Length: 117
Image 1 (cartoon, helix red, strand yellow):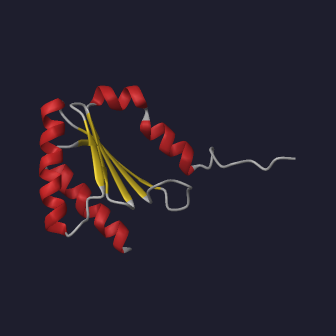
Image 2 (cartoon, rainbow, N blue to C red):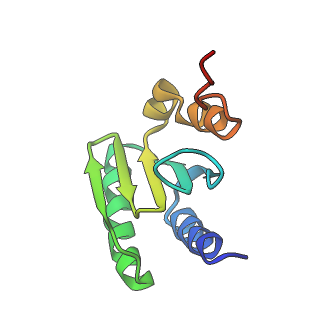
């Protein structure tokens, strides 16, 4: 198991212990994307989204992870660790934005530039 996979596994375990739901991990190492791995999780609601993020920030420090940045709203938090992105969102936002569909298509190469003739 690579160091990246091990880091992702620890983050997923932590989020699961904090009652995050429908956890999905996307390995995008072979894709042209800003991160190598993306973790998507559902919160139980707005307050849980904030609580997950607050707890995650503490855990990131404990794990020695460097938080590059985050964008936070009541319904959605994106946490940037450089090579790992973590999306924490309410089920309604996850359904609305269909991020996993985008990431699946990206992994399949749907958005690769085509050669012009």
